[in-house]
Length: 308
Image (tube, rainbow, N blue to C red):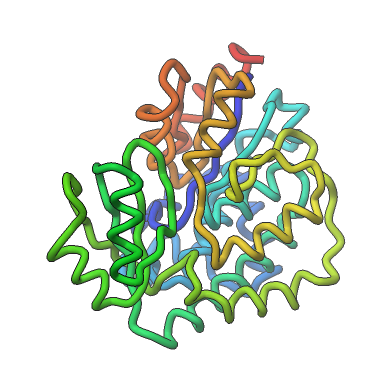
């Protein structure tokens, strides 16, 4: 049983789209999404600098577009189930990529949804000085207690002893100065406290936008960041994505659910690397492949054939 996973914000690097745009299927997919969204995805993914693509309003559409186009290049026009994929999950904004790859959204719907999401989250982030930091190691209950003391929230539970804290910038600084016992704190270069109460204004914008969207049910198993639950309804998955903007990402539970479901292999779509790294620590015995460049596509197809 093989699954596809879709990375979230922070996985993008300057110029990462350049080799991909040489593939006709990838380039065609990008052009379609550029036309639908009005975003210069090709430019952002080839010539823009690190600061530009770190901007939430740019980063989110760029990551989703790359993942959707990489899936188009991998699938050759087949659906996930025709390709031999058993399930799909995305981390944070990667859930939008997962919605497209699983058939819930069309590519046009996905890129418009994520543009709305990115713009709304960027606006919410500009309202207060907030930030995020990765907390590595320590006991989960002790880490959570320390975050509560400082008025911080756990934004991501990434498994393997990694929790991402988010909240007021001064509270993140206090956490760095006095971390929980046995932990190491690494500040993240992000624009705000995503997946916390600070994103409530963005939730309302996205709820209004998605209220009348017509979507389909997923063609394969689709796991939600909300508790790692498998969701069979497309409309429910969209509602969960809306609420997830201000709720913690439970990637740890997604990985546990995939293991329980009998997953034997995992392919991470471009811009890949982060989720396969987490899987190697939290999903022992699972074969993993990060599709970082077009050169990895043949290996991905072979892996699918070996785990049907």
